[in-house]
Image 1 (tube, rainbow, N blue to C red):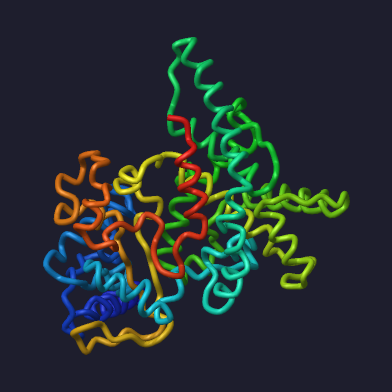
Image 2 (spheres, helix red, strand yellow):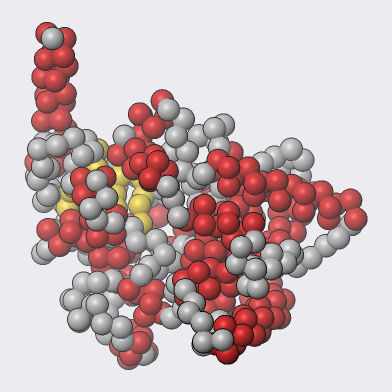
Length: 403
């Protein structure tokens, strides 16, 4: 009993000190509630999505260019001002090169990919993968997109002729899975005409997470030390193993039969042949998996710029300080390891930039309208050197998607 009381007192002292972080530095901040979850409790108990929780915190700091909040006991700087966002993502990128999450590739090797990589390792691989998304490479993929679009038109016409209902999000997910299979791996997944295909089943496993998987994700975000003790992973292990097997089989088939294609996987194979990655390296599978994951989700429900404004693929951009940085106009020094958050969803729903933000209005993206607001108030793919590597392909995909 005494031990429990002592532990409780120590926990209270720890959190009391932790929650005084922003006050001691005289930084505008959202006072932490009386709980161990900081300012994201509604997300933990699934009362609100992360995007809506971030918007609430954004609104509580109205009038400030930035301010502090807490994810559990961890202090995080929330950036509101578009010009400061530009400082972070572009002008001072070397001070904010990495993302928040620390992964353990030994538990799930698939998580060691371009999205989660840090520092020079990320920079090196990014430079090697960028050529696969050049205008020349995309032109070679164009006929694949048109074929997939034609196939989807035929499929939709057959549904319409029977006057049957169709779930649009699932339809676009089928379409994008087929495109990713063809453009990235040269494999026909046949997900448009066969919604029950194994590839779509895996896609649903990745994105329609179970309660347990969601709780693991929250633990990884709020209590990273605890998550590491239990070897929690971000991606589903079963889906990861399945996808790695597909990639391994495809690589083996191409190398055995001397097959070469103009796709993402071929570039990774070329990197291996040049000695940039070893023959037994898992890097080929990890970045191929990431291509599938992002490609399948990024376009499945977002077919216009205005839709991307309302529903950005990544609603919160997160960065970790990699080199000391002093915020403009203050003496506040962010140290290496400190975290910051850019709530893209909240910014893109701020009536200051987008009046009547819940209204769907494509006229917001005329050239005249875009010139009237700061470019960093629209961040569906991120910005700066770490902008989504597949942005061009995603936009091309959107332009070819059947109306």
